[in-house]
Length: 117
Ligand SMILES: [Zn+2]
Image (cartoon, rainbow, N blue to C red; front, side, top):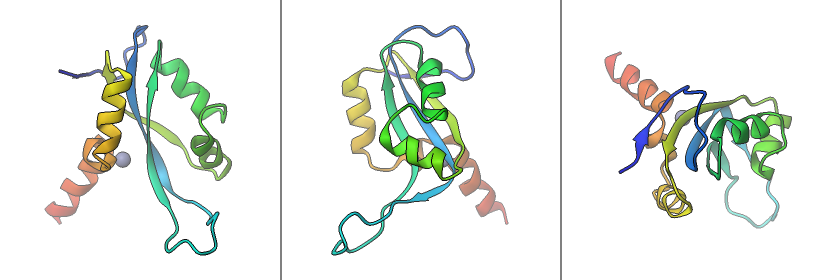
């Protein structure tokens, strides 16, 4: 079972992590025939060791292509979740859910607050 850890500076093990975008990134259409524009508001990744080191790489625009363009578009990458001992398989499983917002405490809080209104 995956355990959630937050803001622990001493993590040196493989893990999966979720980055929440401060605003959604609207991907430019690569293919003019594409039916819709891609909207991305999370990035789910896997780190072989310290996830914070990897997250810092993303935040400075040296991570994945997607996080790089997000940073270039003024989007802040906020660490939302870290799953300790997460493997590549876990990363795949989490990605296959295709609903990162459900895994994201920031988005869940926003949904809860919406219901309170
Ligand atoms: Zn979120």
